Image (cartoon, rainbow, N blue to C red; front, side, top):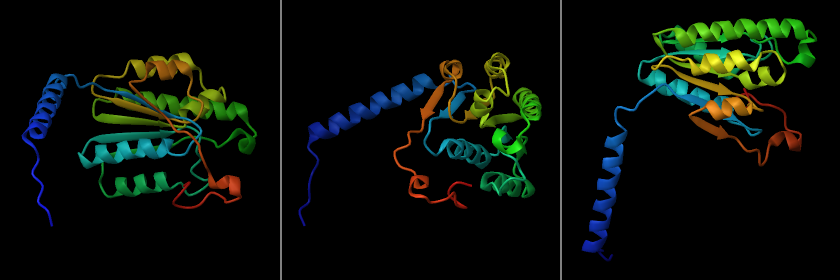
Length: 208
């Protein structure tokens, strides 16, 4: 076995990089703010990305609220909802409100769907304004907007008026450009392959 010794010039280069990184990190200190994070795109992982932020907040004992705009708590056993309910029962500072009526082709009642979406948004606004809540997740908000269940202007205004301590996350396909422009962090999930194309149905632990 040959022992390698890092050349002094390589050590000097690495030390220079570390010093620059340290200075950059120090320069950013004190600039913390409540972020607006947006996950969109046709690929999987939008709600999953939001839930990862939920778990990070809970790991630091920070209070979280999740509002689901489309999903229906009686339609299927949504694993995210079930897990957050279990965490809430165990004493973690998280709430989840599943306030959607399902997809329009299932509900067959667009007027009721719009009313439910409006009620979900009112609940979300209460959470955003709550000084004790650090993170508010608006799950499938973009779909509610796409299906004209909500008007964009008050949604944008509500997110932009969030207090300094509050992070807001919205998920769903077809995010409107106005929300993308307002967001601090935008991730688009790109669909390259999906098992549904091979006739494989949605499965517990993968899709829900």
